[in-house]
Amino acid sequence: MAFKCDIPARPTTQLDDEVCRITRWDFEPGAATGWHEHGWPYFVTMLVEGVLAIHDGEKVTEVPLSAGQSYRRPAGIRHDVMNASKHPIAFIEIELKN
Image 1 (cartoon, rainbow, N blue to C red):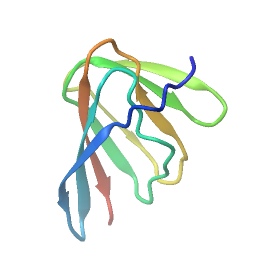
Image 2: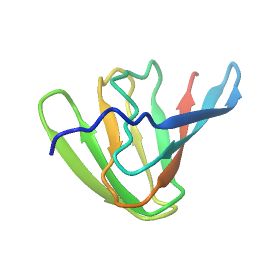
Image 3: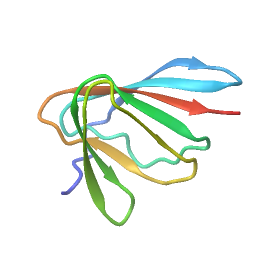
């Protein structure tokens, strides 16, 4: 799957303090975050059922997720995330600073 990165996902910071950063991400179909790396471990909770296409620099993995489903990842992994669904999706990302 090729990434169509001309549509940026929209981040909205909900909280950013000494403990954590909480960001809501909204994606139109085909929208992507752009290449980035997290400085802290983080959790993601889907608000809408959808398929995330996660590019790690070598391969793209499509991950179907249900509304309310969560996952976590360690800090330091460079990646790009795209909405591979045919509808808008959104998720909450919580980065733990401590």
